[in-house]
Image (tube, rainbow, N blue to C red; front, top):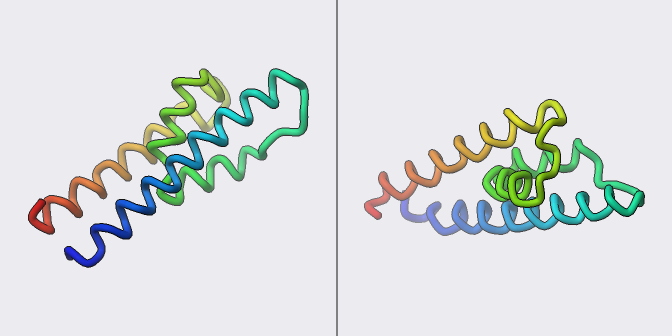
Length: 94
């Protein structure tokens, strides 16, 4: 189990950082009336280990907070991915 700890942690960190960044970029583009990042891209990135960053981006940038399915889907992804990290670290002995 210890062999997968670093790759999973790295995936969550990288995808979350990217998701957070894209939420901020999309918010800026929305305000400027420019071409946007697709909702599908944001959701897929959140599902692929980026849930924590996407959720934080939604809250910090106040972006997609009322747009279905973001208000319930991003917290769900963040919760599941947090549980995954806790499980991986708990089962691998810290």
